[in-house]
Length: 232
Image (cartoon, one colour):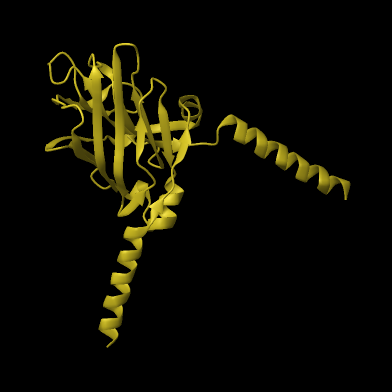
């Protein structure tokens, strides 16, 4: 009887975890740049030259600039492709798979700076000759849904921040201990095909700090508290 109760409890917890939704905060590019520090790595899918060989379409980003690994990919406009990004904290291995193609790298200990939060950046060029859209949907992180889907069809990037503290609170698992992120990506265009990173998304693994305006607000609040204490 006890075993049956334990099995039922385990099943209920698993069902509850799969129904969780991790919140995401929408940011401007400037806000994200002000908040993002200690980047450890990132993944990117970009229009490139659609497997023309002159540049790449799929990559794992280094902490500052450049890439650990890249690959060509022949996108089809409007095609929905599954993707996954897996970080193994023990081996420090990263696997980034799009469709059936996987690229991988192993981080050096010195590369690991902030495996705390996730920044998702979407950008699609829009001009007189091109209409383009990038979409991320059905996102799941460590067994929990991420609030979405997200679409960008302007030249102004959209950034979505997923806080590691929310992930830990909802799943009981810290990003620093490793994570599995899955979802569906779609790159679409009409007219002249974009090139390079003019139709792309990046997922940056880093640390998020409060933006300056938030820090200033907190500072004013603390000053008010101190003034009240002195006046007593």
